[in-house]
Image (cartoon, rainbow, N blue to C red):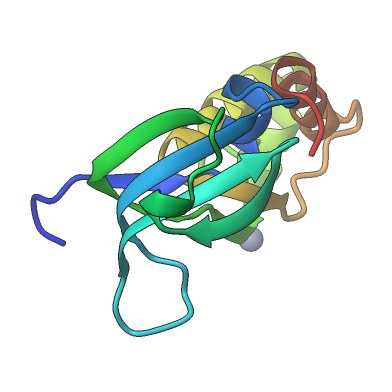
Length: 151
Ligand SMILES: [Zn+2]
């Protein structure tokens, strides 16, 4: 894709954070990478209502009162999933790291790591074994849910 603009289609994060839940929204995509084929779909429209994708269609089928988000200069793709991340670990010596750092520090530093991943297009993360006796990883999850709402 080179210098072409790429926008990650953050299915849960953007929709629950920035789009009105009760209205219909149409996102006009320059290119849509939906994972179903070898080439992106061109000039498609994603229609969203109540936070869920209703259809992928064309401009001629945009609902009449839909809010339109024109991303026709961008490529859109589904949010990325990482099933093995360690946002609470700050060094390679993770066993010592867990003992020396407070749960609050791990939660705050981990939240920064998770926010950076979300901003880079990762929309689903599985924290793999970052044990913390005071549940810092759950504090991160709860902080995100409080700001953006649950999926
Ligand atoms: Zn690991």
